[in-house]
Figure (cartoon, one colour):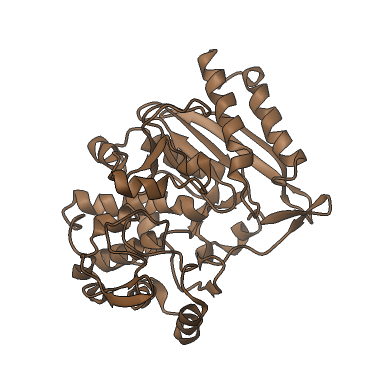
Amino acid sequence: MIDIRDTKGLIRHQIQIINNGVAAGNALLFGDKNGVTFENYEGEADAEKHTPVTAYTIFHMYSMTKVMTVVCALSLWEKGLLDLDAPVGEYIPEYAELSVNDNGTVRRAENVMTVRHLLTMTSGLTYMAEYDSKTLDGFIKQRKPCKTVGFAKELASLPLAFEPGQRFKYSLSHDVIGAVIEIITGKTLDVVFKEKIFDPLGMKNSYFYQSIPADKAKNLAKNTAFDNGKYVNIPLPDRPVPGVKINDPSIFSGGSGVVCTARDYAAFLCEMTDGGRLLKPETVKMMITPQLDAKQRKYFNYKGFDKSTFGCEHTFALGVRVQDKISKTRAGKIGEWGWSGALGTWFFVNPGGDWFLYLHQHTPAKHGEYITDLRKAYYDRRQNQ
């Protein structure tokens, strides 16, 4: 274990995050491929009951689920069961003929959506906020609980925001990948995750949120907000589509469904430093190889997005951001990769080396208010060792 005296700067940052109204409590872990070398928990997991954050606290990972979905997909690719460049319509026939909203005119899509488009979020799908109220209200009104594959089929009825491959757009792509995984395996996504990730890595406190046992549910951290000088518990964002009244527990969301402890997600990151048990090392290398062309990357690096994830030093690979440039204002190494989640979760991995994991549960996540300083403190500590 690393001497805690060497990490006082990071712990101070954790406490400051709480004091500044960014999150009621948090977890910070880091390590390498051999395991956890430091972990620390601060503050409260429940702002009303004043329950402390501990190693047993279970966090909602939201979009950090996407990385696990990619790993499951690539494990099928290794076995020859999934073709990354095949049309999505080969697996879900409803995607064989798609439409596009072209400046207000809906027309037939000219490009074919492929599995790779889903993995790189260049599919043309969105998180639905872009639809006009009439289209969105009609979609919500007519849909019924329909499970993972059914929801993916429903999405195919909506016009895409752009031609597949045209640009990057953060979207429900990984929920559709989850449906493809279910179709190939003949199993629901919660079972696939358990068999392919949770059990092999000994992740005993990891579930899809709707499958968590009652005796573990009591350990779930609450989502919080800072109101009138104090933290309060507030409802979670909907799954799989936050903010648009789609909250469907019949769907195992490949984009947002996993809950787990910090130690469990750390076990996943230990494995992903170079692969071996879940994916071959060469597959991990492919997963973190940049995929966006210059035009697509402009949409990824859009200046209005959170710089800790979409900053100009980053590009996108297969489901993860990758740093391929040195930033003058933010820490990080070439090859660093990772992702984040809607309630304030965030991680990075340096291939073959170290990893970093920070978790809190707060809406809004406010990544931009803490990640830059935390990353700098972490890298400064390593440089001074």
